[in-house]
Image (tube, rainbow, N blue to C red):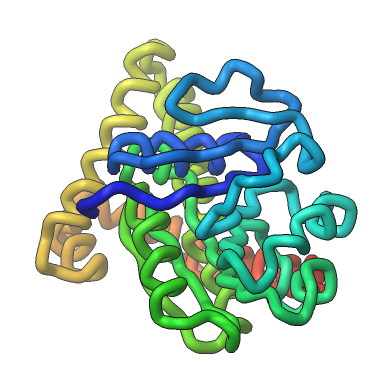
Length: 266
C-alpha cells in the first residue's frame, strides 16, 4: 500500500476504528480528522473533534469512514449527509444495510459496506466489502486501500452475503477465543497449573492458526495428519465430532449470527 492517503474523516474511534487509524498511520496517511468525544487522547498527525459540528468548513475528505455502533446510525449519520456526492462512505457498522444508510445520508451517497474483524488490530484481519451502485472505480480502489492497511480484502457482489461474512469472519475470532478459553479450563481440570494451562492453550491455538495460514493443505488434511489411528487425538475427536456435538453446533451458531445480522439491517 504505497503513497500517501487523501484527507479522511473517521467517525468513531473505538477498537476497530482505532485499528484502522493505526494501519493508515503505518501506511503513510496525509490527514485524518476523527470525530469521537471519548478520544481526546488521539495523537498527531490525526486530529480529533468532539462532534460533526466541529468539523472545519474547509475540510474536504475523500472518504468518510463510519465506525460507530450500528445502534447509533440513525442519530449519527444525518450529520454527515453534507459529504454525499463529494466523498465515498465506508461503513464498518455490522448489519447496517446500504439502502438504510442511504436514507440517512441522502440519495447521492456512494456507500461501501465492509466487515473487518478484530485481528485487524495487529494487521492480520480480513475484510469483506460490498460496493453500492453509486460507487465508482476510484472510490472502490480507495476503500480497498483503507481496508488493506489492516489485512486482506475480499469483495462480494451481493450485499446479502455480508450477513454470512459477519457470522463467519466477523464473529469468528470469538469462536476461536472460546476454544482457547475452554482448552485452558480443560487443562486445569486435568491437573495442570493455571499459568501453564493458559500458555499451552493460547500457543496451541495461535500456532495451529499460523500453520493453517502457511500451509497449502486444507484444514481437513491437516486435522487428519495429526490424528493417528487409535491415538489420543482420535479419542478426543470422537467426542467433538459425535452426533449433536461440534459439527452440528457450529453451523447452528453461524446461522444464528447471520440471522441477527439480517435483523440489524431492518
